[in-house]
Amino acid sequence: MSWLAPAIQDLLIEALWQTLAMVGASAAIAAVLGLPIALLLHVTSPEGLTPRPWINRPVGLLVNAARSTPFIILMVAIVPFTRLVAGTSIGTGAAIVPLALAATAFLARLFENALREVDKGVIEAARAMGATRLQIVWKVLVPEALPGLVAATTVSLVSLVGFSAMAGAVGGGGLGDLGIRFGYQRFMPEVMATVVVILILLVQGLQSLGDWLTRRLSHR
Amino acid sequence: MADLRPLRLLHRSNPGHTPVIMSTQPAIALSGLRKRFAQGGTVALDDVALDVAPGEIFGIVGRSGAGKSTLIRCVNLLERPDAGRITVLGQDMLALDEASLRAARRRIGMVFQHFNLHSRRTVAENIAFPLEVAGIARAERQARVAEILPLVGLEAKRDAYPAQLSGGQKQRVGIARALASRPEILLCDEATSALDPETTQEILALIRDLRARLDLTVLLITHEMGVVKAICDRVAVMEAGRVIEQGRVFDVFTQPAHPTTRRFVAEVIGHSVPAATLARLPAPGEGETRRLVQVVFAGPASTRAVVSEASRDFGIDINIVSGRVDEIAGEPFGVMALAAYGPPERLEAAFAWMLGLGLTVTELEG
Image (cartoon, rainbow over all chains, first blue to last red; front, side, top):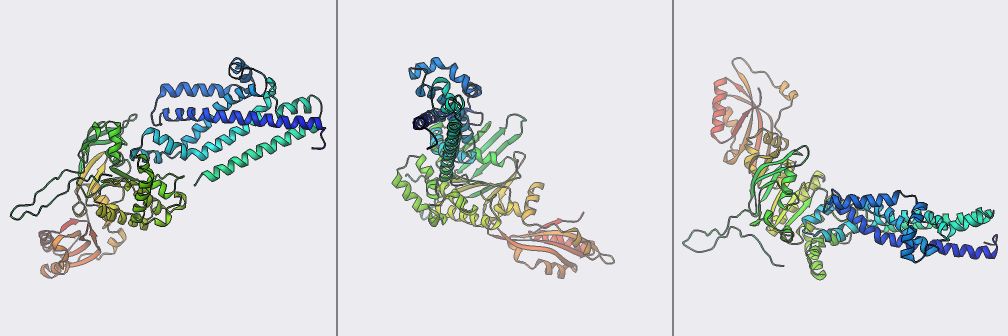
């Protein structure tokens, strides 16, 4: 990166770490929170293991509400909550809170779709063999959906890279923020170009890794 | 694992006494089953009753939508009937709480049309699944899998994934899995409907063989009369949620009572005469009539030279239009379409003689 001044190079490396931290942490939180929500949505759905419309509808509504709020608005709207969780509303750590929230809603829906793809026949066979509902969830539903869950996580990682560019609004830093502040506002096209190339490589890398893992896990 | 088996007809050797019958309790007893699916209100089951005796292979045949799938799913309560009684191995299934129902289901293996295997588990892991669910220790699971793989001829495929198997192999895995927890009953839900004819015969032979080896009671549903003919002892024919006819397979095949049953039977032992063949038959001569009949040969008369005897003794001419000899449930069985020529009264007498021999004679021409 000799076309960039050493000071900018340091900034770039720092920004890359910030992006990786924001995307990694929020995706991890979203996966951990999203799976139980997706399972809840799936088992309480009309065709699920225990249909419960009075749970399914409100939870579904909540997930949709979080998904339909534009991220930049969500980020500022939940500032009090962010302050409560992260202790501050500014910085990389604070940016992780809205990112994780948006990704949780997004991932919950994607996970639910992956669970719905599981062959109903396999679940029926497990019922016929005397499996409990919990066994069906953990020994059939989740393992059978695993490749789909990984593919969904890949999609959300890629989206998170994009979302994280908006984290600059709350001082979250990251590559997107660097590109805007230096590349755009300070008229340094070489910084902008470098940022874009790094982001492209990052997204490509994540997608390839996700695809590889999905292929490895599925035995179809 | 405790080897609980229903009591079978038990003949004690006690000279001078008649054999003692310990139990004739059916393995599966269904009565008054009704089921209507909400919305639209299609009646899937309409007052269905049947008993399956221990050790027999009982077939339920019907077109799609006849209610047979709902019926077999009622046996292990994958489907709950609106009314009726379901007794399996002496247990009133509808009275069981969830835990007892799960325990009861482990005594009833089930095989599915689309195999329903776990795509991410190997053959061995699929077969071990019901044992895992029952909380059986790993070592014992592996021992049981090793024991059952040779029964279905899949030792070499132990670590393969379902996607690497042919349809027939997948169904062998399905059968092995169904039998892993040593059930006394095997339910087969269109188990061969997704397979080609040759593989179908292989799977049916396997089921027949396993029934004998493992003392199983088998209840199967199918839309193919060929399956019934190949392995069933008794059959029930379903239409619009009702059992319209049931009995020993041989009887139902040789003397079907209901028109639907006759159509089913005709599929397997086809005896309809093509129009072109009919047109080519010679016209009757002076003072003669022509009668076209179907004769079913069954029982002791099936080995008599009926055609030549009739021709000689009654002075009539008989033209064999079509015919085949077959075996149903291990009994010889023949069906022929005959065009008989002669004076009307002699033809009548010949048919009466055939009926007297125990053959079934039915008119084919209107």
